[in-house]
Image (cartoon, rainbow, N blue to C red; front, top):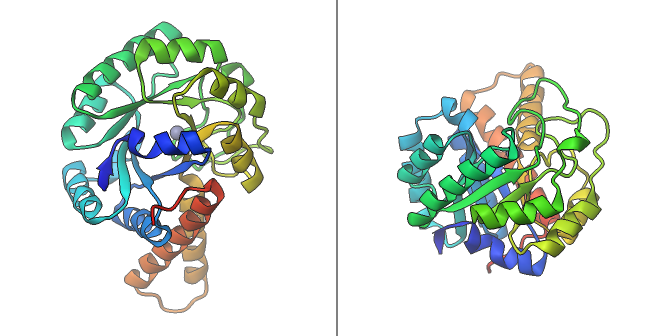
Length: 285
Ligand SMILES: [Zn+2]
């Protein structure tokens, strides 16, 4: 197996009603945590790098390392560019070796979203790279931990527009807005499960849930039963690692830097393995 496109992991997930986690990584430790978790569980995984996180990385070196690691893995793994903000950044990701890109033009008016998403899909498909787009808008900033975001029901995805959007853009996976936000929640999340089911009944394209951190296990499982097959997960993994590191530092014991990062990786692995279980991702073994 090794490097695959979204289709390589989501086709079966969509048919059999389970989800594959898309875990964001912004450094080598996070990437190791995701890869180790996939190896432990024997499941496919999507490794995502968000455009806003490129500031933490030398993308050439990082992608080279990831592709080597993925090459050695017996599992199907997607290397996904998350929340690409322009045609240019998505085409750059294609040229760097990503097997999948997301173009997020969901903030733009509908016609512009169609135009730019369609253009990215047309380009990426020429290189065998899959494309995710977003219709409706999932609020909150990707990786923004400062304050909770509120859900805006007016930005929820319209089911019949979703059908038209997919047919016009020819994308491979569709992120929908059904009540989640990026980063921490303000209040309790209330997902519109009926909307997921309605969109699923109209479309064969895999549906993606962004802003999943903070949802209960039951919420995830119901969303997946109703038709979600890719779940983006980041904030909680990061928060859990930081909480453990802080506890270690607060203990007053002398701590070495490698002990600190090893603890963080272990905690991230626990969070990711747990989440893979919640998503019901099918093992390849
Ligand atoms: Zn997202």
